Image (cartoon, rainbow, N blue to C red; front, side, top):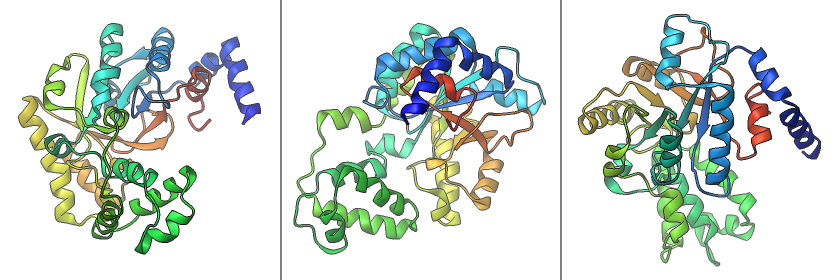
Length: 310
């Protein structure tokens, strides 16, 4: 890790990262989640955007989609699209002022069912409750409580993601029963509260494209056909009704999809993005577009522009 950081810092300081990135003529789609927390402080977020805007051409995701549709090769500077998952309030409070000030386009992928219900994404609530579980835990959480540390939470959440929806909801209910006094902190509200409809309406549509992230952020391969149709199609209907404009772009929750999910999304949307790391080419599958994970460290972000898995 130390050696890798040294390599990233050297490549960034010497401009090698930019040279390497430009040698790989490709489209790039950047994946952001929360902005304003320890993983992506606002200052680091703005520094990243300024660095990218000086070296690449920041464009709406739809422009990259159109380039693929027409088999168009990326330009010499390289087109880059900015995407934000989960429809969080901090996208409006923290990210939007920076994007507006810099005049940079981006796509926000939101879950209208969570906006309506003022609910967190289920895995965010699970993580927050697990962090505050007080002994003694009972039932299926007893063993987990015995070893509960921050590094033990993520494997448990990952296991929940793999369960059928009914089984996952059963565990969520048990977790809530084990944490009856749970009250979100002001910091958690800032990190996990969904964006509001009023905030969505205040976003300049000439800069911000709204895409669907399903109604309620389920792991799509774990739900049945009727639920899949409802989550994918109803989210588009609600968004278009609320916004009064077409919604053509989709983001798979957790990046999870199988052939059944892929086929349905392909029929319903112009394009879809995954959480798989990689560059985008004119030959890329429009409904399995890969992305580059954002990093607060500018040397690491610069490195990922040519090596997304770095």
